[in-house]
Image (cartoon, rainbow, N blue to C red; front, side, top):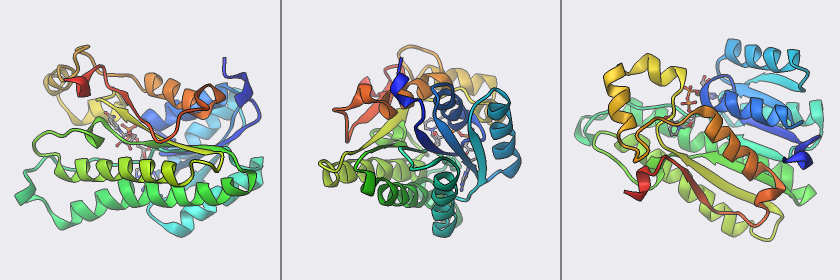
Length: 251
Ligand SMILES: NC(=O)c1ccc[n+]([C@@H]2O[C@H](COP(=O)([O-])OP(=O)(O)OC[C@H]3O[C@@H](n4cnc5c(N)ncnc54)[C@H](O)[C@@H]3O)[C@@H](O)[C@H]2O)c1
């Protein structure tokens, strides 16, 4: 399945851990050469070393997605290493403290918007510039169930992920005839090492209960959707906010 992905080239941001790592691995298994970008140098290098040792083509590129110059360098290095970029998985993101809006801090607003919204915009812009001459490509933004719904205390994160949905849809409309498809994935709560290290088992259970399927999703379930959106199997899909949330946003 997805055999046409063999030989393609992807950038995956936040590829050192969690969902991004699963996406990088799944694409690499499909024969895609991957630029694994992460602000965490050790995580990026470990991920690239593991995938390379399994026979895949990967390079680690330490990148802060909130910095324009670093994002430009990320796309340039990946291009130089493997050739023109076909797939951009703009996944790097951070959380924010769960706080009523009246108690939120300016530094939290700036940090969350810098990574989750500005970072996605910078990566989209770089991807569009790289993909335009080849008149093809797939841009996949990691949004959230909180791109279309919300819950108390999540205002800053919700705003950043609603922004990602807006960027995705407006770019898809603008670039509809360009050959470049632009979509977002909206995960429910996903069982990542980070999630389990930051919440108690009891909190994880109540997060699971938000989904009618009454469980957390897995990074592999998100990576499968990324692979579909990267492939020709989704050739008529652009501007979609693809919910992978165990039914959460259907409630
Ligand atoms: N885990 C969930 O339940 C969930 C649900 C919905 C959406 N998401 C989204 O999925 C994405 C990945 O989440 P995750 O759970 O795998 O998180 P994670 O924390 O496990 O991994 C995120 C990775 O991004 C990297 N990163 C953080 N800031 C960065 C920056 N400025 N530049 C480059 N890399 C940076 C981190 O070092 C880390 O390796 C995020 O955008 C998140 O908002 C996650």
